[in-house]
Amino acid sequence: MRKALNKGTYDGYLLLNDDTNVYPNLFGQLNLTESLCETNYGKKGIYIGSTQDPISKKLSYGGAVITNKWLYKFKKRIPNGEIQSCELGNANILYSSKEVVDKIGTLSDGYKHGIADFDYTLRAVKQNIPVMVMPDFNGTCENDHRSMYHNFENKPLKQRIEYLYHPLGVDFSSRLKFMWRFFPYRYPFFFW
Image 1 (spheres, rainbow, N blue to C red):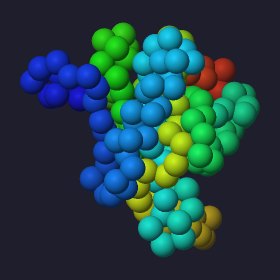
Image 2 (image 1 turned 180 degrees about the horizontal axis):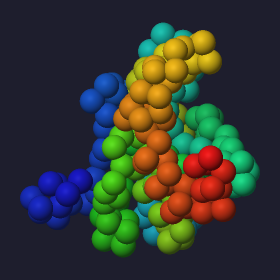
Image 3 (image 1 turned 180 degrees about the vertical axis):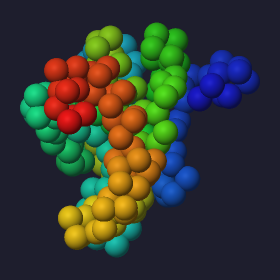
């Protein structure tokens, strides 16, 4: 995002993971979501594209709403043909309008991999910026984090510790920063 900002001024910034394959509907869905966002909220926002696992066709990445702040529980927003608001958004497909970037900037430093997108969308929500899930699935992306969780309790201690600090695993230091920033009352319990 910073490199794009240094190149000039754009209407918005589209983030895509390198393992995400987009559907032809993406730009139509972006335009529709932005139009409805401006109509309903009077401003532009952040728009999350949901991805499907290429084999199971189930939701792999997208948006979610927090259901319990104390326990940090959330419910994923499954595309249903309508635009849905959310608080947490994966950047596998994430569009941030210029107005949003002008107000809250780019992704935060200090995160190694996966939590910077949640940080970004929560910062937007705190600034009363709409974060919306587009109506339909917009691409495919395999949820490649599940294999690290598989049979975790039976793995040797050394592997579990490696997973704790691995950028594609728990990424403990990044998660500590995230908890401190958005859920500080959970920090001592998360750390413990």
